[in-house]
Image 1 (cartoon, chains in turn blue, orange):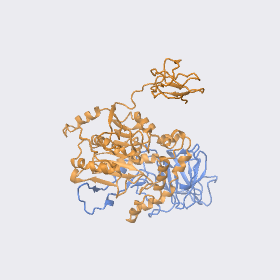
Image 2 (cartoon, chains in turn cyan, blue):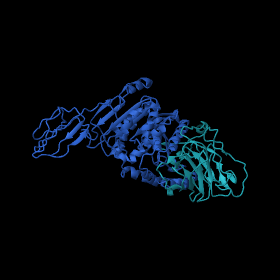
Image 3 (cartoon, each protein chain N blue to C red):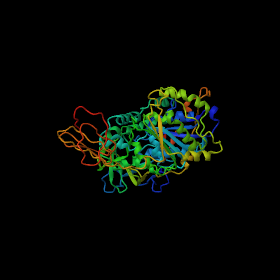
Image 4 (cartoon, helix red, strand yellow):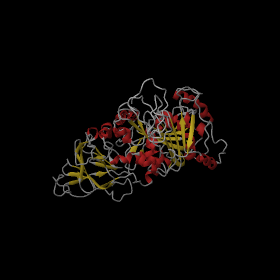
Length: 200
Length: 434
């Protein structure tokens, strides 16, 4: 599946059909050797979370100046490669097999993800919007690699169909009316964002 | 949460609609944030949304990051297209966190965002945490710790009820909370201003806002402080500006001192109609203010545009926009006909801009006293910006920018400059040293 959160032709993603070879870790002479594919989460679809019946394997969700990886083994070494092919940072996935990239240290570092992340702040930057980022699970054999994807910018506004396709339902908020046994939870909705994340 | 106003008061809809958006619990079904509650009472449909990584929302939490700005854009555009939304344009409401969030969303300029009403906001988040380069161990630190706690899995207790009711999406979203970083620690480590912090610095962003803005704030806001005042002249591209500043406290943006003006603004720019407060709400208002502020006798202001017919929206709007942009309310808490401390001002002044056109201070120089004589200065009219306060045998202490003080005590020694600063005090029986 491709990344289709916004109309960016460079966010092609998708399933590559390259050979899956034994070996071929991150330092292999041919960086594409032994690389299997990860799914880029289609933000336009009702992208679900790993425990909601979705396909197994690494899932990569590019967002606005963020990338969220799920579906890997707990403790996996997940690396973010920049558009120039440079390995920017690696994170150890948490016990649930997740790693979230948003802050990039000044020099390549391996970090624990989430609460345990002791992110060096001096000289670091936020993750910049742009094309050509790649995520690799350095732990698997063969190495699983995403297709190149775009990290979104705030200005990457999605197609209006994302907005037009969503319907919200509400409840009456009474001041003087008697609404009987109205269930307030009927007014609770989820709105899907351009990167597939749902807000309550 | 989507709530529609009482049809018994406001009819069947569509309704003017506002969004409240924060990392608190705006989408909690059984409780409303104040902005949502008041707006709903005043006839607005409300859509209250939790930021990513909070409540039942998916994603990873952060503090005012660009992902939250973009989410606000997407929320606005989605909500505006709903059938219950009058005119298919929405406003935003909220105080503090949900006030600050409005400014970040507004700078993305969603086409369907009609107006914003941020109350009690900050300016630069980093400077809020490191004012003057000193770590803010007070409110800001505790606020960040609380954000970390509430953004954790199950950190907001109401989500347990949602999950118990079968909200599997909410349950699944909690899994990603392990990816939230410790923001208090992270930002505490950010001892020096990082260039990327500019992307979250409101004084650098608010000039991008193009829709009307209504903003209020207190000089001595005990939570968000008074930094917001430094960016009021940065909204140069907003289609309309209404600012009200006052002495007082963080929640006073919802006090009757200003609440009617908030309503007026939303009526003009979101509902696009002549503001008229529903009589039933006006009747109930006193009761609500009493219970909220613990003070009797507070009421909504009268309808200021009652003389305009409903059809004369354009005329009423013109009159509204002809009013000064800035109101400064003085001595809130000292209005004679209310209890001491009540959020009610004693007098006010209006200006077309804030700050007022700059007036440069003129220099004033303290006259050094002879070492053996009491410290003194002959009072003169102040006209310089440097005051050198004499000390007994010590290097004079200089104060810059003071133009209105004079010292009158002891024996004057005659100034070496024709100008002195004037600071009237009762004569002291003994010499003073600073």
